[in-house]
Length: 228
Image (cartoon, rainbow, N blue to C red):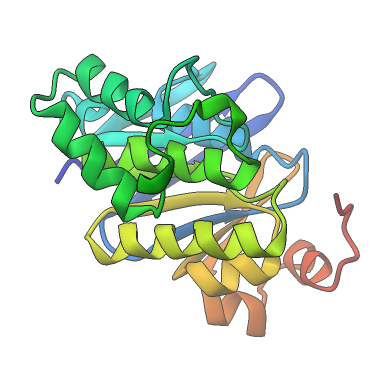
């Protein structure tokens, strides 16, 4: 395993205040907070898309990029078929037998019947499942998810959550940012609560919702902090 992931006094401009934490293998980690709290920036720092302006981020493995994947709120679709989108991701990663692995990944997310359809004409929920298929084909040890259902209807959200549970069941470590309290309860084992760029609270899901230790978390749960 490439984990643990260590963040030591990490900060980014004025968006993320200095924070220190360790992310380990196992239980799903939910980064929870209102819009503008800094969740997406923190995810990008963890994934290596942003370089911190202060502090240090380190992994157990010297080459963590080979073992992790990230799915964004608005996935980028290439101008080619759904199948070809997954094949391309595998070839970029240098993984052989791309056609077979891509087909398996599409079946896993329920999109095999749309394999030859242009990815850009798929619905929002289908595109998000395709993004998850690209990640699934890579068999990552860590999957970062940045608000993966924020713009989807309840039916599409349920389909995406089912795929996320499948990742979790397969042994992939899930780290997901969301502002959705119900989703955090359904998918998370622990919560990192971010408020105004600060890590205010870290707790198991049930304890966070049942007995929040900070005034900010209690207000957020009650809907008294700014809400999207």
